Amino acid sequence: MSAVAAPQASGYNFAYLDEQTKRMIRRAILKGIAIPGYQVPFASREMPMPYGWGTGGVQVTAAIIGPADVLKVIDQGSDDTTNAVSIRKFFAKTAGVATTTETKDATIIQTRHRIPERQLTEKQTIVFQVPIPEPLRFLEPRETETRKLHALADYGLMHVKLYEDISRHGHIATTYDYPVEVADRYVMNPSPTPKFDNPKMHMSPALQLFGAGREKRIYAVPPFTKVRSLDFEDHPFEVQRFDKPCALCAATNVYLDEVVLDDRGGRMFVCSDSDYCEERRADGHRGELSGEAPHLVGGAA
Amino acid sequence: MMAKLNDKPLLSARNLGKHYGQRLGCRDVNFDLYEGEVLAVVGESGSGKSTLLGLLATELSPTAGAVNYRMRDGETRNLFDLSEAERRFLLRTDWGFVRQDARDGLRMGVSAGGNVGERLMAVGGRHYGRIRDTASDWLNRVEIEPERIDDLPKSFSGGMRQRLQIARNLVTHPRLVFMDEPTSSLDVSVQARLLDLIRGLVSELGLAVIIVTHDLAVARLLSHRIMVMRQGRVIETGLTDQVLDDPREAYTQLLVSSVLAA
Ligand SMILES: Nc1ncnc2c1ncn2[C@@H]1O[C@H](COP(=O)(O)OP(=O)(O)OP(=O)(O)O)[C@@H](O)[C@H]1O
Ligand SMILES: [Mg+2]
Ligand SMILES: [Zn+2]
Image (cartoon, rainbow over all chains, first blue to last red):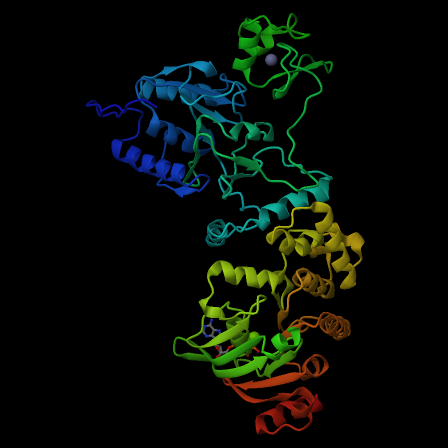
């Protein structure tokens, strides 16, 4: 984050939101940072986009962004989806900030679904778009009760949910939005990132902020904070594994997406983090199909 | 040492009362309950039975009096001085509460095993296999086939649901169980089986029970002592057989005779 701009005289405000609203959101963010994993209510504003488009994340970004920031927006690991493109354009227009698709150049990364493969740094802030912030919602619909359960760190219900998962599927079948315990205290939904990304949250040097627009909640994980995925002793937390490396850049230990190549059932698995994949290919890494289908993933092969 | 502990009551109500605004719920209730003892609370509709049970279980706050409870560590505390965290811990470790309507006492969207395992997980159980084994064992004890461990309570009969509630409550080996009309939603034949089961578990586990019922036959079958309530007050109390065979109060005589007539 860089210095905050003064309000502009044109009637439009820097980064869309008025300064008072931004101060209110920043107060919620600071409180969230002070109490890692705790959901802070905030007066979510109408944004010029529908709720499903990450209005919570957009408001958090708008409250922290300054003119010197460089913004990256990803959706499903890609910078090119409609959602990512429109949010990037929104900030380019309302804040005039530089945008990038390269993780290493970004100071703020707003995301839906992924945490970049490249290790984030102390200089970066990652902003998650959260649809459902309440991890206890599944078993306890009453808001008054979930608040009490958080206050008392009464999290047995989270394990009931995992128990049900195992009893139904033989293993913990939750693969997205896999609940975590933050700083040995609050249980939190990481937003619909794959559980593959959960370990990246643990002791991350980057500040992690979460915004839920419709549900009017903000929460945070400060840098270098313990983040533990819930599990059972005999069913320990595990990340997804992939049999093969990325077909384009040969990366292993990354999250892969399936890409259909033709209508005869041909398919390949490639990095879901398109920036990471491109960077590796630019560095000369080659996967087994890298010569064949560069057009499918765009960028420089 | 143990014997000495057990000489003291497990729970004592002292001048306990509750008004709902102007309306009387119950008042001036005094009694002691000892470990392993079953106390029935009887009386006509509106006499204050559920109010009293709600106070004892700390679900309602009193407008007068105290409930002293001997905690597992031997210390006696006024329940209304406990913190919310202490109260909740008590509720799911040392106590059980079997409701008239199973839908209030079970999680209908969670499997039988999950329902029974919930308390274990709430107090820190983190081994799936052991939680499941314990749940399966408890299903067996309440005469539910362990093969049904993954079924939802929705698919259970009324009697099975009540038995599942009992398993869910007893899994942490509570010392005290509250029951509010646990059998009254069931057919007579199903009631008899459930009462047998409760009676067996109570004596096997040495449970203290406070059971609210309007059915004197249930009180006679299960309880050692009985408290008769009317218009919010306890009007007669004593050993169940004595009170039912030789009631002193005219009101109790009426209650007993109406049962005999039925
Ligand atoms: N939430 C409430 N608000 C106001 N009055 C109440 C409330 N609950 C109970 N009462 C009143 O308190 C008195 C005792 O009610 P309570 O429910 O304890 O009786 P009960 O013996 O359990 O009756 P029943 O056999 O019908 O369940 C009644 O006059 C009742 O109307
Ligand atoms: Mg009642
Ligand atoms: Zn790749």
